[in-house]
Length: 254
Image (cartoon, rainbow, N blue to C red):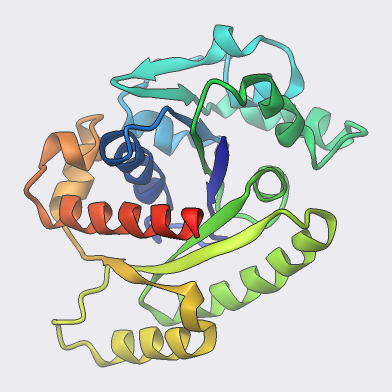
């Protein structure tokens, strides 16, 4: 079982969209058994899969704390299993952080289901602490979506410094790659091209070839509780996430 975290300390960069569609891509194109974990109390990923009922108490936080068993919490949408997020997770943060095994709580909990899945894809909150720390410590690789704008570029530098500190306590955690979102090299937008070029030069092979263009179908798919491959399989969004999933599989297997 390979665990992948989709992380960025800045919101609005396509993190949740990427987690959803990478998971769907792994299921569709690699015929993989995939578990998705929503670690954000805003539960955007959960809602993107059409799970919207209010008052959800059996969430990924209650899996980490051991309040409920895995099979009591996990939900299935199509071919993907989901440990949902909910607002209730905020109330479990202190319990999780005060546990003597922190920040290895999630890593240890996932040992219980390691034979059931080929991949686990984790969507993290836009922060550098708490649940993001759990996700980084538990994963084999983490992937960082980078929106082609100045503030995202500055945030990336801060995040990479933080993630380097994580590796000191979790040597098996590796940066899988950084990929551009809301970016199209064919559109003339000087600042975007300059930022992407600078990032590619700085990160070398860590910066991925695949990129995600602006595509309204991605937002429409989420609003419909669907992945891009189900909602608009011929769209630019589906094409881009196919390429990204393919590149992730290549990086995992190398």
